[in-house]
Image (cartoon, rainbow, N blue to C red):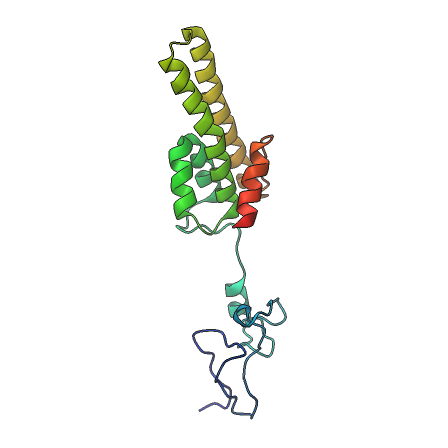
Length: 180
């Protein structure tokens, strides 16, 4: 048996009962988020500091990949689909996609863009607004959805994940993603 301790399934914190074979109170770093410490690359469990196994593969495992999605799908396609399906796909992606802030931003922005426009179109149709204006509004809705889907797809496929903010709506979407 080796004299180095094995890493437990959960990170140790200050209330840990783990005793190091070398005689310390804990064989791991006490800066876990559970103990109130803020881990960084120098003291996280897999970074090779005093508290981890020290392998590069495990250090890579802890890093967040902004291109990763929950289902392993392409970020550019999902972001464009959030617009193309209107508020329904935006809601589905907001519920299901938990890994990519890029997709969540575009899902919020899609919901904030398409929901009021579609509700306005339905309301004006119910009150018998002149057909010419309804046609113009419908073309505007379709055009804005297609443009935003193109922008979301293009920004991700160019490798930047730069977020295209619509005036007013984009600020809300960005703030909501940041508060999550």
